[in-house]
Length: 142
Image (cartoon, rainbow, N blue to C red; front, top):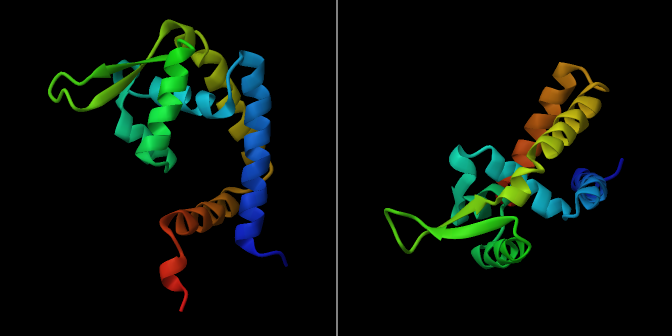
């Protein structure tokens, strides 16, 4: 049997390919699509920039570059938080808001197609495995 983490990495690569392919039909990247989806689910379609970094498990500097690129394309804008001028908020722009319904439909359909192939108890085991990996298994290895 293949190592589980190798299979997770291969599956992740396939997921990224599929999302990139759909996102390209919208004129954006898969990562941009994921950020738009995340922001679309936040109140006012706005989120602190550090929440985006946390959601996607990426560094602050990486998030800054990504948000700057999205801002250049007119997808988001960076604004100062009212209560803390040091904190940057990221807000969807009308160009990105026009894509929300198509992105949501894709995400829901994609998830339903996957789930249709497995029983709920099987999905629960997959969830446990993925949560364990996500939390970091290095501390468990002697």
